[in-house]
Length: 156
Image (cartoon, rainbow, N blue to C red; front, side, top):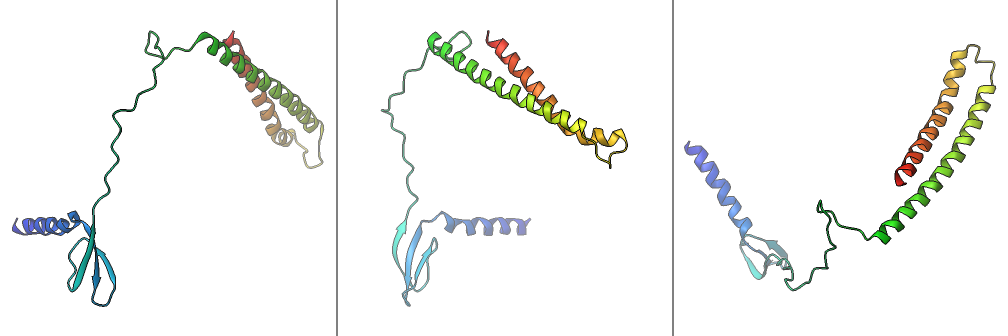
């Protein structure tokens, strides 16, 4: 118990110098030493304190809060919401056109791959294995088109 007390006391006393300010010392050989504990045979030049944190200004005015709806959500003006909906519809329609074009290209590539048979592919399983990534690409584009169409339907 006594050794535990001494260990705690030594630990606590070793932490005390860390609480002191960091000071700049110069020794007899002219070397500059920065320390938070006194340095023997050296002259203290200056001490540095922790920089003060900037205090928030109490006089700053807050911008006006928009009105809130029933559930505490901020209300959006109808004209602003219409503009957002129009922009969203335009973006979705452009994305739908890109996906449809990509689907057409993926179907063409798939058809080319299915029509092509090499001498190494004597059994149909190897053909299916080779064609599988192209089928997956077609399915991905079809799912994307379906999702975009659903989003467009939700806008109406």
